[in-house]
Every structure is written in C-alpha cells, then in structure tokens.
Image 1 (cartoon, rainbow, N blue to C red):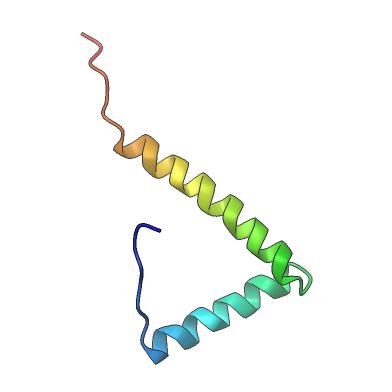
Image 2 (tube, helix red, strand yellow):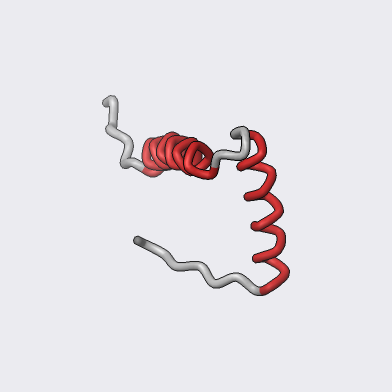
Length: 59
C-alpha cells in the first residue's frame, strides 16, 4: 500500500454514505461492489500512469 489516509468522523460518515449507495447499486452485494471498485480503480490507475509516463521525443 502506497499511502494510508486518516479520516475524521465527518469524512468517515460521508464515505460510509457513498459506500452504502455503491453497494445498493450492486444489488446489496458488497463483494460485487468491491470487485467493481477494484476494476474501476485499475482503469483509473492506468489512465494516471499514461498521463504521468515520460513522453518520448518524436524528433
């Protein structure tokens, strides 16, 4: 794990609300929601990596 984030109680409550909505979107199945989140994070990481990769000179 690269970075550990500490949340205050307000942030934790907001995150829990989002979590509840995300699990609800996945028919109440937390495992299904977790799998979807892993896939989404993987896609986002690929995009970040592509944007931050050193660019090759075309000269």
